[in-house]
Image (cartoon, rainbow, N blue to C red; front, top):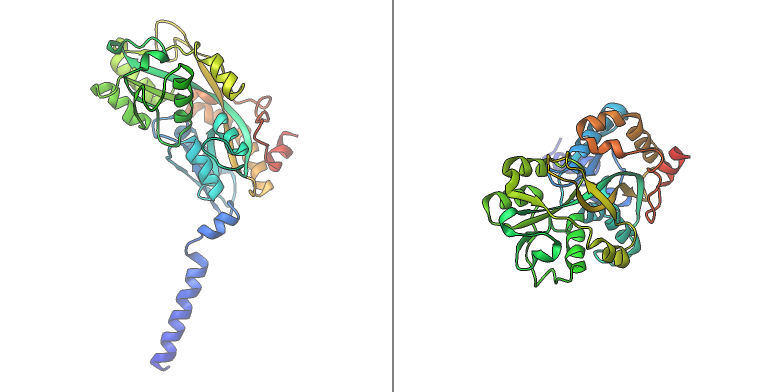
Length: 321
């Protein structure tokens, strides 16, 4: 065989390999379920999303023949929704308020997004903690303080900015705001570079447990009941009364807070058969999720289909009947 002919064949072979196993980003954008490996967008590594996302990935690999899954650490809700829309992730955890913004084309989203829900999961509880010496008794007391409002493009950030505004403060002018993930926020409180942090997560959140266990009375939860009415008036009933029980983090008293449901979301283009299998998997193996984090105990078949204004995916509708 001549060298010229051999070179042509080698180039042709290389192109064939590239076509079969190269960059599939365009294909994933057209169909987020293309291929057998699924990406799950979760959140910060010390949050409940990350714990349950890892457990869900494990369940998929063990119980859905032909599929493997990977849980990816992310900035959480808003970023997760963007990833699902782009096709960078197949499955994502999101707060219901951020998901509502996505389907309505509001705030972080300039137009309605093709997002569908697999199920409503557990509630997230807004957890605001401040160093005891910062003397923060309400959100209004954050004026002039160094505050972490959560990772950029996270559901925590959305809630934090809305709470600060509801307290009559300008989030950009009246607080010394830092956009940090939970691990960095916890460390900031510990080393004194932050006065307070905002976190939205399930109960208990490992990072918050670490903080309250380490600092004990040197850190305190901030009650949020006073800003809830204005948040509901401006942003809807997705914001509800919640309570952080005193036993969750070994506190002296219950703390009134703001609760927001979590959703498991996908792109509307997901294969209905896969969406149905995912919904079924959650309830067939709910006990396994509960062992990973008690927040999963809140997941019920009665509330799971209640995902408005985000539509249930057709496959999930079939499962829930």
